[in-house]
Amino acid sequence: MLIGKYKILGKEYKTKDYVEILNPSTNTSYAKVPALKKELVDKIYQFASNKQIEWENKTISERAVYLKKWADLIEKNKEKLAKLIVNEVAKNYQDSLIEVERSVTYIRYTIEEMYRINLEARTSEQFYDGKKDKIALIQRKPYGVILIISPFNFPINLVISKIAPALISGNVCVFKPATQGSFVAIELIKLWEQTKAEDGIINLITGRGREISDYLVTHPLINFINFTGSTNVGKEIASKAKMIPIIMELGGKDAAIIIDGANLEKASDEIIKGAFSYSGQRCTAIKRVFVDKKNKEILEKLLLSKIKKLKIGLPQDNADIIPLIDQKSLKYQEELLSDLNQKAKILIGNKKDIKNNIFYPTLVTNVLSTDRLAKEEQFGPILPIITYDNFDHLIKIHNDTSFGLQASIFARDLNNLFKIAEKLEVGTINFNKKSQRGPDNFPFIGYKDSGLGTQGIKNSILAMTKEKVIIINI
Image (cartoon, rainbow, N blue to C red; front, side, top):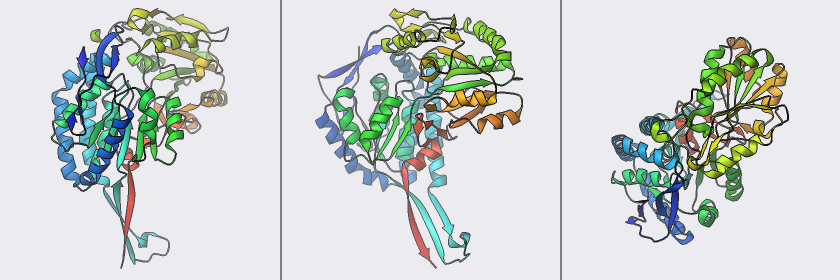
């Protein structure tokens, strides 16, 4: 069994109290990570706060030195990190490797972006009276101590996408990863320690959420919270955080929308990749399909034939359908399928391998917009097909959900794209492509219960900094 060890308050932490991590593929013990207590969390916040001004006083170039070294170390150790992801969160090796490589690029681009947005100048001449008597210099200043809370499904990328913009702009971080993903997080922070940066710039906290979560999100020294996770947990954090600024990436119910005349072969390929990659355990996974009656049967046949070709197995074998993160997720898939309307029909799937936490890819037709499967985020390999009558009906049933992350429109006519896109209550529309996060320099936005604030490299820097204006009177 692997034992996670890391530095706390500048020294290697020793304890006998650990949290056990299971390998999702085998449901057996895989690793142990320290279980920190409330008293130590308090000391970590104090330590981070004391280090923040020193870090802020460094120039962008001085902070960039450490981030560049971190990116180089992550790249050098990418195969090792990818293998850890495979074992801890059951993502296949190729996808895990891509995640690590993408994170390296993220860090390097973040440094470049900080130089571009660090200082802005405006003149009073640009205002309505046209006078040239004032110049405003607008700086970006850090908030201070930023609490980072990351999910299991992207245990490196969704950490880097928070920490890199925070650090380059002069903030320091207190970082709590999901329990499943904590061991990978420890190895990632060990690489940061190798950059020889001052202790206290990134402060890792592992432990039992039920013991420290409330204290973690309500501590008086927090200046900003950056969270990715479920909508329910996000709402709890927001209610407890009160006046603390927050950016949140929450759940999704992304739709694939088929418009008459679309290339159904291409659309079905994108839908399969979007719905079943990492067994649908992504906020941007395609989680429902809307199709008109004319194209419904053809699309179903295409999807059915391609689902049958998906490789089902363990992540070590680079399977398409891999184990879900835990038994709870497995049971939830069954629960959603047991609560369908009477006319709904399961075309394939609804099978499970309990030993390995695998739920087989499932296609369900004749789903109604009122079914739980049409409204709730399954976060698993189930794809419901919903039929619409006309554009007005489509808009109505699409927007009848609490989520609003992304949508994919498959059509030939750009006029139809814009006609529908304007009325969809989502942050991003993809044309003839599956929903996805990125490229990482694009804004990433969640409407309604899918998020709060805007991410993406530039937007994350802007979110985790505040403006300070110096006015020069001429």
